[in-house]
Image (cartoon, rainbow, N blue to C red):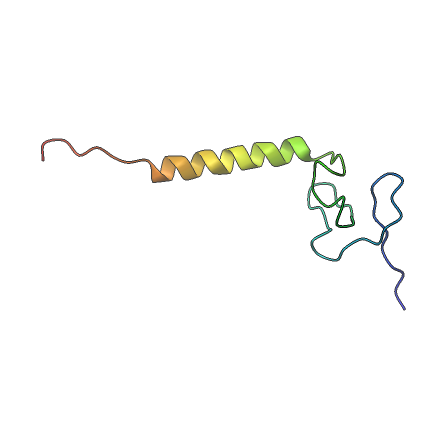
Length: 71
């Protein structure tokens, strides 16, 4: 039987949640209470914010209304 994964947050002994508890930024495994980047003090938090900002800026640029003159 495979060993149960424990939450990687400091001093937490809860079992890690499969899939939703996996952090793609620091490769850690976390319980429901620590699965969010802010809650487990993720080392990749700044990278996550930068990626989100760039993605949002690209989306806003793609949705920007173009003015058609002379109609």
